[in-house]
Length: 492
Ligand code: AMP
Ligand code: ZN
Image 1 (cartoon, rainbow, N blue to C red):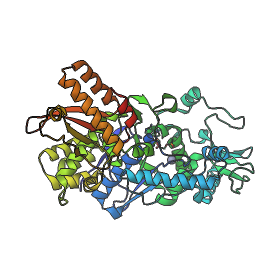
Image 2 (image 1 turned 45 degrees about the vertical axis):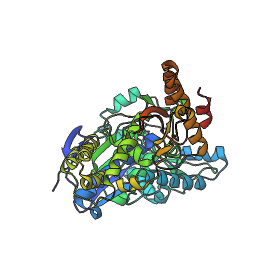
Image 3 (image 1 turned 60 degrees about the vertical axis):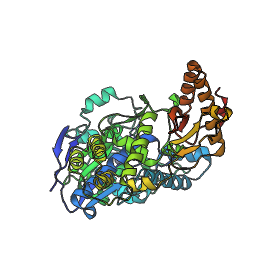
Image 4 (image 1 turned 30 degrees about the vertical axis):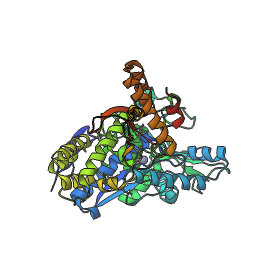
């Protein structure tokens, strides 16, 4: 059987992966808190662990893998969103959950086998907390229940490689007076009447965030399972706390054997943030006409343990490449998955290398191998070929000088590309090419170059071409159908 190697955060080494039970390989990945659209960074772990899920299914058989990803539908951010919008919590979480599923499906992510919602597992959380109290790992204080990190000094901090003392020294957390140790974290907290709450031995309240994952993972995957994943921003405190809760509540198990963490996503070299104005959601990109496959392609081109930089240029290159690949595979039948693609994936999910190899297969013209190998990475080239992408429209026109000179030649208007474009955008693009060709005809290279770079800034590439009869043509190549025609019209 093929051996998968994975970098385990716990041991900080790349290890051979041996499932606890090869008939039921089990993976848990922390899912979203549902109060808003997923931003592009949130999509990275979804795509990374989707590739791992597909690889595990390929190696162990689809029916021998169980993948769980939760929805956190009880959280103070949700409560705040409800309060400020005047909408009910249930309405917000239901709507956001569906948005998440739709957006991730657009990226080609398979649905996990289980998608538990935290609010459906409150009794299991309460039972786990009771067990922790009974074993001396948790205590009640002022209506809260807290995990006592001092009760598990030997284990706490191992995943992220910090000692409890270092953590206390570096902590900037607000220290509640009822905490025995500043690092103790909340398992249960009281709810006022206006907040969601459940009856519990400690009064009406709600769970802390970390206990949700421990309880749901235990219920659906057992005391020990194979893989736990998430973004590396979750390593501390979230994953550290999950381990403490689960290992103390179920000392007979070892919780997750292998921990995988993806690095963060940036945009054009900068941290994605609202204050920098470079924050966008997956839906924003889809609405701009960037297909989900393109987003997935760009993600896969960087290894999951490296920071990934989203750039418009990468998206454009992905469009071009996917378009070429899908032309080659048009009408092809599924072949064998390429050995080198598989070798790259089993080597700690080296998707960057796998994508590189796919392009070699493309160059070799092996259509059915390309089709099957791309599919293993979640790229369905058959679907790509059938989609009408609103990209790469090219309008070709001839220099109208020939008409003026009475030469009987009609300007050509060619459209190369997929999808639909408005008449207005088409007409403004055409007149832009005419203005550009006019500068070139007059050898006014300064204005021709200026116009070309101004158009490029708006997403229109101007290119010269020559028709077979030797007539100068110009091409406007549009990167999207969302270009503002008024802005093109304003370019002189
Ligand atoms: P959150 O809703 O912030 O808990 O995040 C949900 C998931 O998205 C977690 O697995 C995070 O690690 C991940 N995540 C958040 N921001 C980014 C980012 N910029 N790059 C990659 N992953 C991220
Ligand atoms: Zn979690």
